[in-house]
Image (cartoon, rainbow, N blue to C red):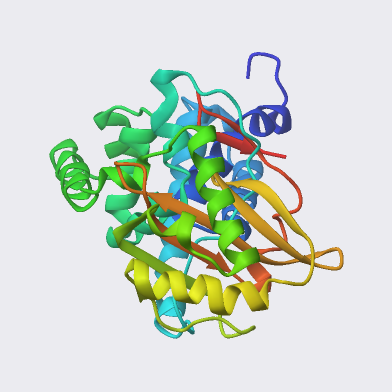
Length: 304
């Protein structure tokens, strides 16, 4: 194909496929499996029969993700406590205004909203709204009619009504709120934090049954203030803390020796208050956090 080897062509597309698969699955481990399965199929196909390598690879990867979502749903039924997407340390870059949709679609809050969608709604919405594919292209990828494709995207948009899920405050705003959170941990005083929490604030913790974590979601500023100052302040007193950009939002990583033991990131309401606190302690989800990913907001690609 135009003098480019099959392997080189795939490697050029791989980061964008990873970006798509991670957004669909909320798990980098599963995303990498889906992309590798796509590569295996690419190796065995007759390239002369393919009109567009990009369209073929997107379709194969998307449909592999749909298969994985079915098995993921069965696993989630038995999941212990709240499920939170695998956090990624994504190096912060200036994002052009026109590419904000792709950057905002990596936030933990947005990825959790994806859980409200059926697998095909999720795929159609991401391909059309985030990756800029046309309705005919999305319909071909999902092997459905264009009218059905439009309905999928419309239904998905109806489920994703919370604009806060894609709201990313300025870096200064995030730092100010995170510093107030850390101050509450260190001093036991929530004076500075109290006014920064939305009335609808929720705190959830994902241990996956593999380590200690809350199995219920805390709601409301009063109970969360008490939990942060009295419980987390004591539990997080030891060990090193490091500020990381986690899925596009300033957060914390807590270390036990050289290993990351806990990651925390926040979500914000449209008025800039903290309305979500996400704590990830499942060790399977923390393995990749130490190695930063890069994100190209123009294409949605993710790579090391």
